[in-house]
Amino acid sequence: MAQAIKPLTALLLLWLGGIALRMTILATPPVIPEIHADLALSKTQIGILTGLPMVLFAGAAIAGSLMIARLGTVTAAIIGLSLCAAGSALRGVGPHVAMLYFGTIVTAFGVAVTQPAMPPLVRAWMPHRIGFATAVYTNGLLIGETLPAALTIPLVLPWLNNSWQWDFAFWGLLVALIALAVFWYAPRTATAATATAATNKRWMPDFRNPLIWRIGFLFGSVNASYFSLNGFLPDYLTHTGRPDLIHAALTALNMGQLPASLLLLISADRMVRTVWSYLICGAICLVAIMAMVFLGGTWIVVAAGIWGCFGAGVFVLALALPPLISPPEDVHRVSAGMFTISYSCAVIVPVIAGVLWDVTGWTRAPFIPITACMIVLLALAPTIVLRDKTTGQDTPHG
Image (cartoon, rainbow, N blue to C red):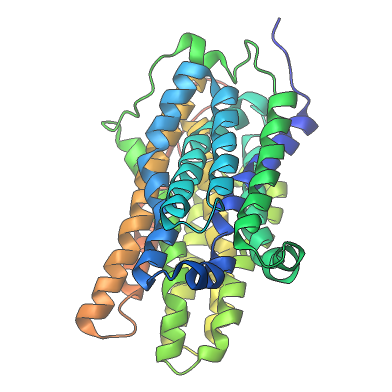
């Protein structure tokens, strides 16, 4: 007989899984000065270190789909989380650049293969509350991004004698505990969460399906803009004579995401099925970009916070799409395709933004591809098709 999972347990595991998928990745930026000093890394090597995860997120998502098809969703998630933990610990094994890179690759690979497992788990554990469960999972992602940034310098490093190696091990240990919780409490019998392995051996995303490209680019437009803003706002503020606003702007951009994830806990089930949710969020994000470019000064901080809030709204809603647009046995394939396309955008768009700045020498040049991403979001939102829960027929989004 299939083993059921209690809704509260399911939501807690989804939330903890979201936290685990970001903690070890975001543990790196706070300790970059210590790593730079100990290993004498060049700026190029630091750039590679921070850019490797994004490349793996794009390149290894399909491997996650394969693991889900062969082993089942829960087992694939446990393996992925275990790799996250092990990779984070490996990064601190001695002062070796090669081990630092290798551990980062293992950690990022673990995240990349776990991410396609989360939408199928949402569909399997909370089939009637997909939007709500996705909002819970995404809130975990955002908490996981915030914890290392908030706690590493004031608390964790002093507690660990300012050792960046032990810092990586600490965050890896927390992820290992979350993996253990999933192993202990998540059912791995013939439930919908594991039926994939038994009934569907297909794992390669169907890239001939234009819908996968549409949701991939929709999700990618937000991801690419987010990483571009994080990467270029500091230099933009410096070149426009307001370096004093860098900390405030980045804090507003990143902390602004939390209110959106909390508000969507109430309304995500309704909002995910209406095109106006995406259009309103996308339009406000576009206006916020324009405010950063043309108003300047403290308005950049305000606009960054607004973009963070409404950009996170699109992020949460887009993550809920794979369980809604595909049958249960194909959610992992659609998710893997979406992640592959979206994180490829997140790698490529910041590079384009940087090249435009270098070639033109114009400080506003990086905002051109970011603005283009917002226009793509607004253009794609009305084209998404959702699967009707009662009839199983495809219905227009909104």
